[in-house]
Length: 166
Image 1 (cartoon, rainbow, N blue to C red):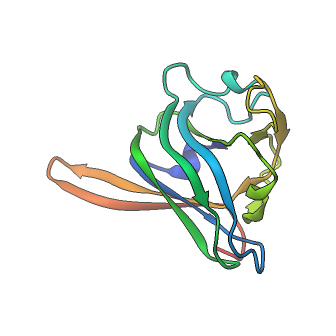
Image 2 (cartoon, one colour; image 1 turned 30 degrees about the vertical axis):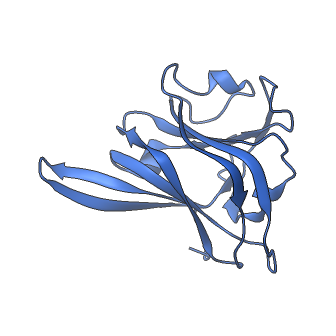
């Protein structure tokens, strides 16, 4: 999914991401072999071809989990800490890729919003080079460190989405 730079608003080292759970009584669900990538993109809307959506050389694996627990209650934020922080310079849009070999619709258990543009892309075949465009984007919080001065650091939290649940 693509996040517009105007929605982020500043340069930041992204250290974690959170999604808001929307399924009541979800309980516990485990996804196997999950990898998160962040990259830069010049596009406001995605192409159906995965590799056309990010700027070459900017796609970085920020987290790989053998198993990811997707538990929580409706309205809770599920936070995911990255192993590798991602320096976002605020010159391009941000692209988030979540890769898992057995997609079963479980990521649809997060609250989302419709920006009326093709901002998400999915495919049930992890080996495919293109996918299906979707306008729904999950609510997410990007958290990280904002460098203010040489020896001063601040924290930043960016909440993406527009709804009464936020």
